[in-house]
Image (cartoon, rainbow, N blue to C red):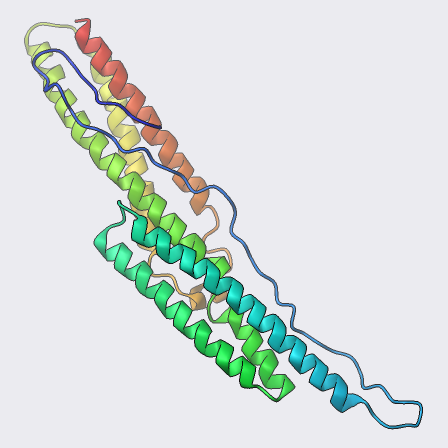
Length: 259
């Protein structure tokens, strides 16, 4: 449903019922990053019999620090993009915008502190633990980024659904008036009933996604990696329901003009 226009009916309906905002759906899959920090292997021995374990461990330590810094920097770049997206969003509710902004800001702060901690590590086991926490404690790609996108789409669609509900109420008033005037409005009423049904179904999906996703934390994802599974598909279903409802509205307006 894109670039929806003003709907106009005959004289007894206001010339401008309302304008609907186009919903931009999130496309793409959630990006899951894998841990690449595990380093194993046994110590080697030089030809003269001296152990090189110390050198090997130092190399492993530096490799972990370097890779950890790379992954943190990549996430900070993503989080900056998410901040801009949240700030630019026009249909996020005030509460959702505050929640998402605070979460992204907190994640940036945490990762920045973690980078300093990782850079200061001198023990291999501690560096591994710090590097792994980039994933387990923050879940930027598994949770934070898809969460921002899902909430944005859900809020966008709830604006459309509210507009469709208002439109349906105005169309019902007109249909009732035509019926009282002796016109056959059976087909129009059937279309309006379908419009209302589609809008209600879409509203149920969008509001449920918003309420169940907005407060999810990395610990929730750690306990259940499938907690966002299917949310994109559900929002696409809601979008299709909204499109069907809008088509019903256009058909009703056309039918009213021809009574």
